[in-house]
Image (cartoon, rainbow, N blue to C red):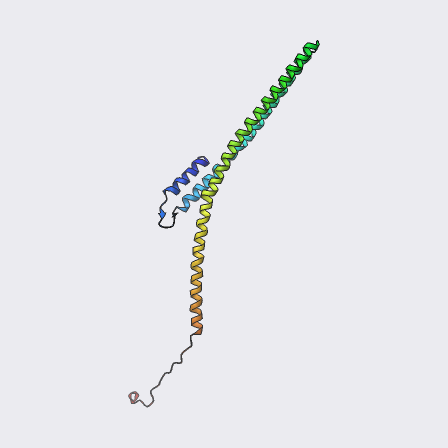
Length: 191
């Protein structure tokens, strides 16, 4: 599965999860989320490979444009060399070679711009996916975990306060003297 498909699956899981009343929070199976997270991580290299392929493709296109540019230049020089015999021919050769140079420059510029635009679209899309994944999934998970930790810490602090109050009350409590009266001269113990 691609990263987008996995993210769609995570989105469906979140949308289908039961909601906790009055909190705006949902309950999801942690194991399912962790498993899906692993799958997303495993799928990322495909997107990274695609970005590498785009970079390599850009280099190939630029190399082709350069080769075409050089070929056109060589042809223009050959063409100009054959036309140098007369002044009129030379002037025409200069015009033609200038036109060939201009067309080669335009072609090279056009190829570079198309390559940059294509790379911009792909990388911008990848950045948006990563931002969305970070904002929607990682940010929300962090907020929930932080909220749970705060709640647990609040309960622990409350229990510690109660324990300390009970400890202080026990320390201040005076130990009572117990007087045990032994019956003296009681005839009931005679044999």
